[in-house]
Image 1 (tube, rainbow, N blue to C red):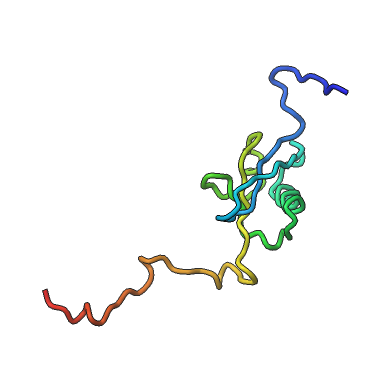
Image 2 (cartoon, rainbow, N blue to C red; image 1 turned 180 degrees about the horizontal axis):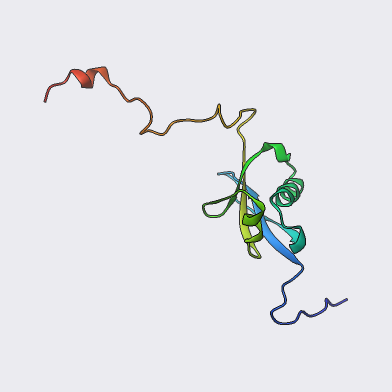
Length: 119
């Protein structure tokens, strides 16, 4: 059965998103569909997790590739068809507070031998 044709300029009832879990070894996407009237952060999270077989509680962040964090419903409503989205999972059992690792510029880099050197 053929699908009804859309008028030019009419938006489809659903948006398709390409979703994956952040993983350096695996970079394949799956496609999920969300109805335009149901676009929300929570719906994107729930459908993505269901399709990928993970628990929503394990997701720390959602990123629109290449480098934009999605934080609220308004961000989700701005997404376009076939937008690439990545789920960033929490490290095993840790919270955001305990997994913070300072960058090189924030770590103390005191070297006692270097401190005694004269120039």
